[in-house]
Length: 191
Image (cartoon, rainbow, N blue to C red):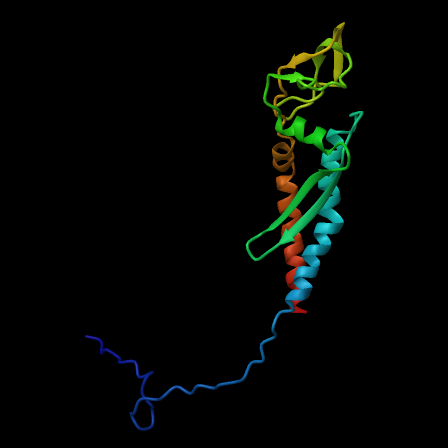
C-alpha cells in the first residue's frame, strides 16, 4: 500500500508551528467625485440635445396649423430621475390644449347671453389632419356646404393626446441620449 502524505502547508517547516499571515495596511486616498461636473453634463445634454429635439416633435405636429402655438421646455434633474416638460406658450396655447386634451360636448357656440355675437360661418364637414390615435391623415380640410347660423351646438373635440404619443415616439432616443450623458458625466466627475 502507498503511504499517505500529509500536506504541511499550514505549518512552519522549521519549527512545526502554524504560520500567521502577514497583513499590510496602506492608506488609499479616495477621490471624492465632482458631482457638479456630473450635473453640468446632464444639464448641457438636456439643453443642447433633448429640448430642441422634443420641441421639434411638437412643432412638427402644428406645422400646418393657421394659429399654431409656440413651445417652451423646462427640465428637472433630481436624484430620482430626469424629466423634460414641454408646454405650449403664446396666444394660441389654448388651441393646443383644446385639441390635445379634447373638449366635452355638446356645448353652444356662442355661449348664451353673448350680446356681441355675430353670425357664424362654417362648412358642414371637416376632415381633421390628426387622429386620436396619434396618426396623421393628411391636411385638415373643411368640406361640405356652407352654413351661416347665429348659434350652433358643437359636438366637442376628441382628445388627440399629442403629449402621450410624442413621449412614446421619443422614449427610446431619450433613454439612449441620457445613458450616454450619464456615462460622460461620471467620467468628468471622476477626472
